[in-house]
Image (cartoon, rainbow, N blue to C red; front, side):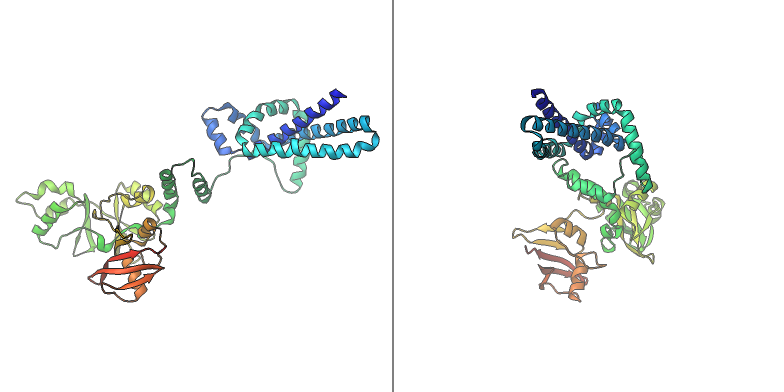
Length: 413
């Protein structure tokens, strides 16, 4: 009798082993396993090899689990009859069901669900051995089961890692806050966003482009070249729509102080400048910069009119965050004040403001704060005007040349 009771206990433990093995193997992170396997982890390789054919894996697990449960039921019935007679068989079944649920199903499966990788690593070797021993039985059962599945249009093949979409990868990065530093996480999300952002959203607006106008007198041009802080500037005649090319300032600096320096020498050093449509996404433009071996391009609308300028630095800022660019001056567009408000340049883009201040300003095709204010008011405001926009207080500080130059923004929480 004692041996029978011990045998029943062993069978419950065996059933628990197969239950935890099923949950652990099915719940394990296959991408993590693949990474560890490539790094030389033998246990991870074993687990991956078993997961290649889930039908065989489940076959050996369910055979073992079913065998253990049926044999345990038989032993429980024998024990009950020996102790209390034949009428106690039903009671023995109820008690065994309760024991199996707790010790062979719920408890081991819960542990396996909490620690799937560790569980899979522990059970992989025993399962491989059992699969080899019971392979003929597993093969017969799988053949019959797979034939039935084919009748309803399901074909069982070796499994491979499913490819992840961009949105799925984005979710993984978002939910990996503890494992990935915030700066790295921000950079990864910035890469994912490149295809959703157009060059128009990040470009330097037409009014902010700094360049050389060949229609200016030579003295003004030389003075500008001496004072300019940028290494690459567009050269045009009259306005930016009549662009002649791109000038690397370092190419012309040695010639500036020569007595025979003239505008023809500037034209001599001009390089080709490229044009991109305003609706091109940043991923396209990044690849285009790589292909043409250039870092700057003019952004044009559907009519070929220049709307702005985009550089490689502008795109990189979307990934790594803001840093001093080669096009804008070094002053900040958004400056925090002691009272908690912000003084903002009217040419600042809504995208930059929303990203920096966590606001949600939107206005259709309008991209800058100046455009948003004018569209909201329906006219060009005067300095000193106070109003609310999207629940935040706006004060017009400076208006110049029919443009809102500076505003004060007080964010209402």
